[in-house]
Amino acid sequence: SAVISQKPSRDICQRGTSLTIQCQVDSQVTMMFWYRQQPGQSLTLIATANQGSEATYESGFVIDKFPISRPNLTFSTLTVSNLSPEDSSIYLCSANPGQGNEKLFFGSGTQLSVL
Amino acid sequence: QKEVEQDPGPLSVPEGAIVSLNCTYSNSAFQYFMWYRQYSRKGPELLMYTYSSGNKEDGRFTAQVDKSSKYISLFIRDSQPSDSATYLCAMSAAQAGTALIFGKGTTLSVSS
Image (tube, rainbow over all chains, first blue to last red; front, side, top):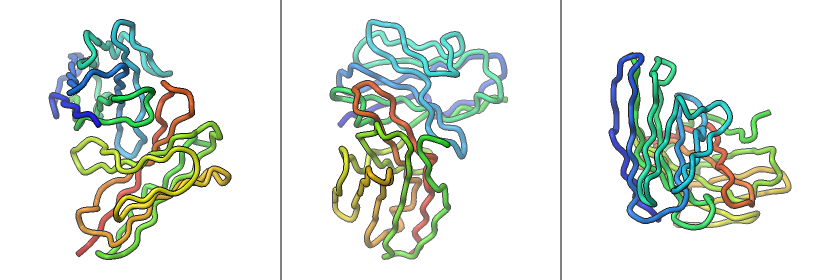
């Protein structure tokens, strides 16, 4: 298994600003994933972050809006830029301690509210 | 048609009841099937993991996969108030690195 620490746990931000979410894993992992969880909706994958390469974004998500850093094998950040009320959601970091991503472990999430 | 369908509920049962949670899917490439439990204001917690078809049991929890029907189930025996949470099914294709696809989650409430 993997223990994933995510912060902040919640934040309230003004429109037009940015929020950076940090994710720390207690072991080295190849792949880290960022998900968004909107009320009443499925978890939606934003991007996959591999150490040493640029993140791979899913359809509907772009790097300018959701820049991701992955400086080492235990840490990643997600920035949500130019915030609007539509960005209000829970953002979740996840990682797989083994090969592939079949068994994903999650952080506790960041509840973002944009005013 | 969405790739993964899951009835959001809510589902309310008395303590001690047997709970059945289900998901259907459309992508025959899915090989890995998971159930996550998510408490309010917490991240999803991996509950059960199954590869391909069959049953898997862990304590009061049983996961079933029927690939021919593209249908997965999670059974909870002797349900407890502490089981009150949202249960998310998730699945992935065989190739490593493919994304997990989640259902919307079913909210379960177990009353004492």
